[in-house]
Image (cartoon, rainbow, N blue to C red; front, side, top):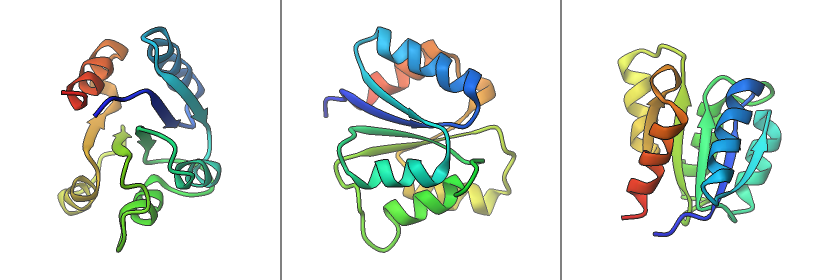
Length: 124
């Protein structure tokens, strides 16, 4: 699967801009959205190859967005979803999210370079 378009749903301006710049420099078309409500609407359009989804968002949490997108029916079957969080979750919540997402990353551990490596691994 080739990844060209990325939806980045991230309310932390510094992190969002940092990831967005580094992904754009690598040739990806990135749309940065800063709240969960708008992020869900964008994601439901189904036009993104990859959705990078923060957990702690204003208006609608990432867990709710993930449940909507990948709940009973997969509303974005052509999109990969990677959850990004710094929020320490209990093991049960983490496992539930991991079962619906294609990746689960702790933001404190992920540099832009590492994020690019992970994205490129999906393309193999």
